[in-house]
Image (cartoon, rainbow, N blue to C red; front, top):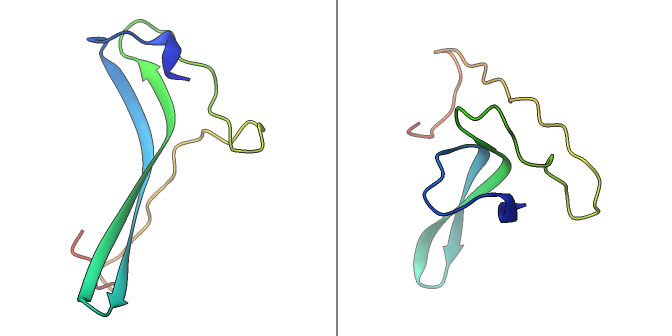
Length: 78
């Protein structure tokens, strides 16, 4: 997927960010996962081939929508 880009190209990346807490013998640790699902060149009007999952099937590349309200009981700092 990255073969169509060169070093120095300006790109736009759409991704999912996930985090989780792990309680181990040495204490609490936090792990983050950054999963890029779309990469396209900026300004050139050209995009890379659609992202594919591990099974080789094309994934839905619509941008995810974040809906939240102040009343949400979420303890994440972002």
